[in-house]
Length: 139
Image 1 (cartoon, rainbow, N blue to C red):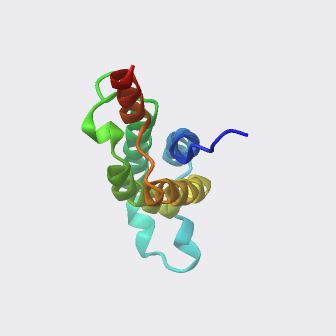
Image 2: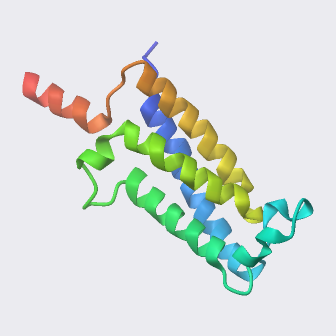
């Protein structure tokens, strides 16, 4: 049996969450609703009349796609290789997704991905590009 590479597994989960978050943000522009509106109406100003929360979710989702896919300009950079940076940004993405009614599932996916990234980080895994560069230097 092979060894589970946890940062690749987490990358795929976060990639799915980012795609889902973009779709949920677009849907939120048409049907604005805060998930926590059953507790308080104070957050309704974040979704209507100006769709601030939807725009934030759209930006986080697009940034997550560009980071995890990766976009040509981000590939191989120190930011792209850093698991620590992901563990800083992903809670913000999960929080913004948890506030929007349409994006509660991506928030759960982000939390699962963060847990797996933390597992990989705590076991000392390095990113794919670092491992590939080390392997090329040894050859």
